[in-house]
Amino acid sequence: MTSYDFSAPSIYLFGSAALCAWLVLHASTQRKTPFAVSYIVLMVCSVLYALGYGLELATPDLAHMQAMLRIQYLGLPFIPLAWVAMAWSYMDPRGLPVWIGRALLALSIVIFLVFQSNELHHLYYADLAYSREGTLAVARITKGPLYWLYILYLNLSVSSGVVLLFRAWRQSIPLYHRQALSLLLGSLFPWLLHLVYLFGLSPRHLDLSPFGLAASGLIVTHAVFRNRLFNVLPMARDVVFEGISEAVIVLDGSDHVVDFNRAARTFFPKLSHAAIGLACTEIDEDGDFARALQRRDRFELTQGQGAVLRHLEVHRYDLHDRQSRDVGKAIVIQDVTEKKALMNELVRRASYDELTGIYNRHYLMEQSAREVLLARRYRRPLSVIVLDVDRFKEVNDGQGHLAGDELLRNIARTLRLRLRSTDILGRYGGDEFVITLPETRDDDACVIAHQIRQACVDECGVSVSLGVAGLFEDAPDDFDAVFRQADEALYRAKNSGRDRVERYRPEPASV
Image (cartoon, rainbow, N blue to C red; front, side):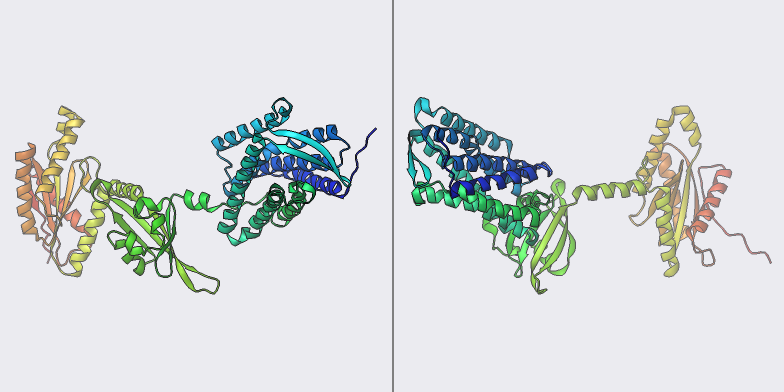
């Protein structure tokens, strides 16, 4: 009965397989992220590869060697897929895109089936012979065309993974530099030794790839415990920088563009890969953006016109190095058009009467009180008119509330057409309107009131009563007092037969 002859290389590979198996067990206890899952698959493939090759080097004959190759090829075809998936998910926590994963899986399955059925077609291994080199059993292989297809697939996948990990290392913040570097170096060792074997430079024609797995395992073990590889992964630039909705532009100390994200192109169409190195003024057509950056660290900017007008909120953050030297600026831009429209709508609803479109009671009183304070301060005249629709209840009762609402809208429209832009018009409540007239004496206000009364008759088909009061030298200095005086005059107009204007006159002081 033949027996296996275990040498130092075989024992080394068994140790490598044991280390990879331990990493599989440890990774399986962590969160099942796309990175952890792809890493587990890669390590399982590595265990099969190292274990099978270690036994292959100790096999006593060709039959046993073929059996050991079958063990290795349970994992070898899937190493390219696992390698790319691991590197991709380190860069992007969402994992490998489904269509790429399916394409690589299909190719791996084809290679697996081709190898397992090689005795039928000999397209993978054209010939396989057994020989001994001292204590080692060495396979003498004549490689077929499909073997080279697998080698091409393997090297393209591994090189792509290395490029992704290199990008992760270069783009990661300092906190993740060591973690990314450990993963990159751990991936390089097996690949570089594979290239040595591929170019016929390895001693005794040994496949050195599985020997690199031990060194790779030690480096990754360090990353697992020292840098918390499975617990904390960086959010790479492509996910964070490109994925955020706000536009970001990075400028150097001379205000030249050094980086930008996808959202920034929405606001500055000139931004492209060719724009790197351009001055900030060259990407800004109007120049408003560049000028504002020099003066303020927070400002608003408008772009476009008419229906496509956009409101932008811009924040400038100065960037400093470890010696606190100014090295550039990060510009964050947010489109606040919808927010601004919503705020304007909220202000409109809080300030205007929904039925008539003029000021509501609260805003009317607030603005009028402000005008009274200004009139008192600068000793300027001011008058107030209070208007009430005569027999408005009869309109509601006889024609319905919709007719009453339309009447109030018509009266508000008539009043607006006869007032100055500086006058304050509001609906006090029900069918009562208030007009505050800055820079207007009460006798002039009476003339305006008569014009309004006649216009309501002619244009709205309804009579109104009006009370007028002016701001007297010895009167209280708040609007409520003037309003009460105008309301008192209105009460006299209603009691005197309606459809008339009454002016407030203070009662003479008793002697």
